[in-house]
Image (cartoon, rainbow, N blue to C red; front, side):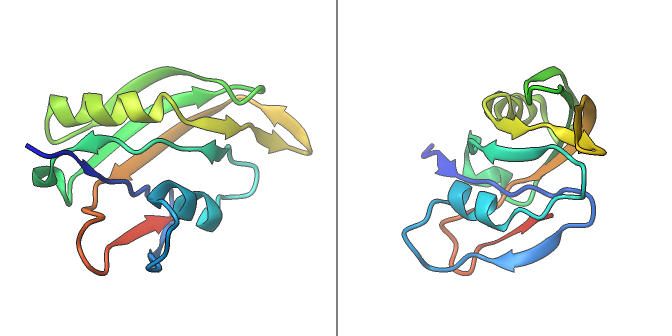
Length: 131
């Protein structure tokens, strides 16, 4: 089955944004529109999971640490509709790069809970959520 490039990230109180029809990749659009909570780790490079269209609408929730250097560790799939999807999303997010969270201007290690919502980016009017 043909793999479809999909990515949507829901962080805390995310807001819906429409993807503009442009030459930008889904990843570029996400990074440019990211609005994280003050002091939270900020993604600086993301990789979309490669999964089939049957997963559109599914959400996988991951939990992991981002240390003071922006390095990730201690990953765990908190919830997923099935193990194959969970592993695909986990493998993609393990490749993400982050700027660390800061408290009073000082980098701090933070435990992150990241819901990743799968959308079919080939559908007209595809939408994704970002915080």
